[in-house]
Length: 390
Ligand code: GLA
Image 1 (cartoon, rainbow, N blue to C red):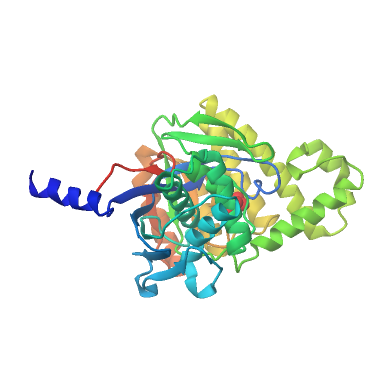
Image 2: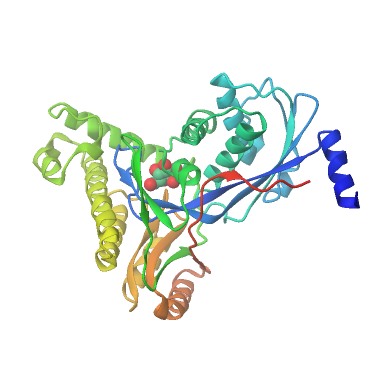
């Protein structure tokens, strides 16, 4: 027996195996703020995300550490009395998932240590929090043999974020992280959770992610307000129409009934939700037909709608999108994710990529003093266990 095998035997005998899990971040191509409005979204899982190493303990303690937040040290909790604590900061995401699993009757019968490291830039709107949640959920599922189907893990993670963390998000981020497929986008109907994988056959075109480095903060931002405004608009429409969600409305139905929504701000929010849902369906159709020109135009319209009607853009992201629109080789560009900062997504011809990046970098810095970061998206698989390590 060699040294390595002996070491791994030690770990096995004394239950010190370290198990390794990964959950991806996501980029949403189109369909923004449509998930909680019962519409469609069109995200994909990224090849980067959150890595998590699990090691069993013999007592009932949970000890958590993130290499992305070293200053927070090791955060401890008791498996039998998990509560939200603002001071726990990032660790509320994994703790929330564990608590939700317990609330649903799943037992974790001993404590553990979890070490996280994410290669997704935090606060960039690429769902680093959903990736932490899904990595935790998959780790619990495997190590405690809970046998929970992946789609249920997705729902539990959303519940953790809604009820434990207090962010009223829809299901898109958790779904993309939990159900992503390599080189495919996911057309998801958030009303029914029916979904379809659409191949990303981009023929000499790449998905460029542009990080404005203007950090967003969803919980403290106006995200929950947007959700409430949309719900109020729906209630106004329901005085006449038998619909359960804005996503059920066609553009014609909306235009014929929009005056039922008396508040002009709520009317604009509803307009975005209805039109964006239709744009998402058209975009998926265009992608299937290989019509990336149309796809790009729909992305541009999405940005305008988020800027003017849903008002979740910000000057920095407007500069990035509008600069992109003027550069040859860009088919479309828009803000992506929850908004109020974060990233833009653009479809760019590979032959023009260098010029696009150089131009956006310069214009953005000249106008804002900020440096943007650029990543060419590589579309990866779902949250999963990685090969065993010791
Ligand atoms: C955030 C939320 C998602 C979704 C997007 C906007 O990422 O977590 O549920 O609402 O914003 O499309």
